[in-house]
Structures are given as structure tokens and as C-alpha cells.
Image (spheres, rainbow, N blue to C red):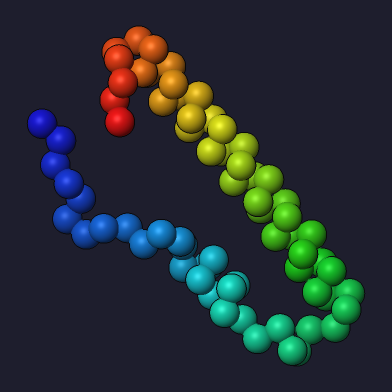
Length: 68
């Protein structure tokens, strides 16, 4: 019924990969602190989206039975 994707998706996005491999030596203390704040905000945004996805999945499982 459902077909697998032709190409598997990477675990992380391109922007995440670039951010995690960026040379941090060029940044000062204030810039690193700003970076941490931005990354923490992104973590919270991702957690909220994950919770929304899980709630949708749980609702579907309750209605149709376990789907995963």
C-alpha cells in the first residue's frame, strides 16, 4: 500500500550539519553566547514540533489502532 521513499532522508538537515561543523574559533564570547541562545531556541521549537507530531500519531493510533 505505502511505498518506501526512493532515497532515504538524512537524519539531520543540511543547515544543522553545517552548524555543527562550523569553526567556532572565529567567534568571541558574546557571539558564542548568542549562538547558544539561538540553538536552545531551535531545540525548544523542535521539541514543540515533535510533541505535536506525537499527539497526532497518538490520536491516529487511538482511532485506527497502532500504526507504527
